[in-house]
Length: 292
Image 1: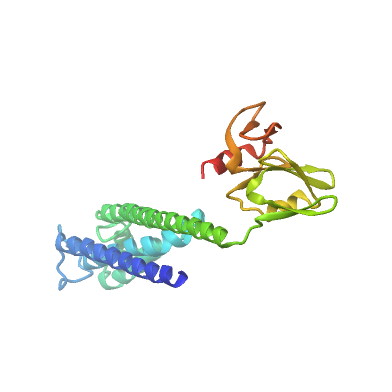
Image 2 (image 1 turned 60 degrees about the horizontal axis):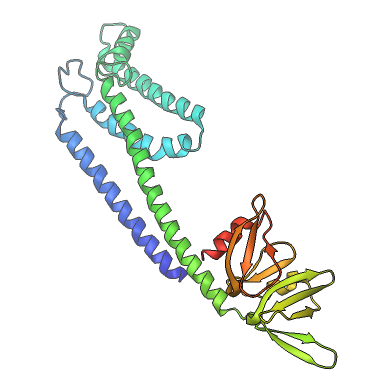
């Protein structure tokens, strides 16, 4: 059974992997087909006009993918807010300083290096302070929506899978219970003989000091020299329920119940003169047990 689950999980994960990366491929195909980039044009030209510089066109997908697959899952999802913010800003600042410094070396000519560097940092080519920084900001925001939507879909699939496995586990538990051998009779010692008391004929068990009293469906009382705890461990939990610290009742003889005081219930039996009551703590489980 476990092997079958693992195979299904593997196939489902592979399908999610393929759908996700096909979706990403479509996004970036649409992105590169909707912008005007002259790849053969100088990468450090100062006259891009309405065109996008090649380094910006490449940097934006890199920023998007790093945020989706590294920064958010590694730091933001683990509530490392300060690390996420510092690392994100630090990487952008480092990239811009490096790019501006390299560009300034090639573009300085007769102008002072510092002046060209300042122009690069605040000019059109800058991902942070440039005229096209809205592209960086927009795709950075889109990366959040993409990652959170992806996580939500994955979580929903995981929750659905867990519900399915939980249902299967309940079925297996019931089968195990059915296959388990429960006590079907008790030996009751009388004066000169021993009586075989069928478990199915017992209406309820009641602890009486050092022994347990068993009431059968003919209103006969029998003494069992055992503890209530050990007796309950030998009974089928689908048929018997311990309603309080000292009493165990048989489902077959319950015809109803009604409210008593606080959260307690009066259990109505079809063949007993004694009234049984649930305890406050066991009442919710007793209600669920009756609905099984």
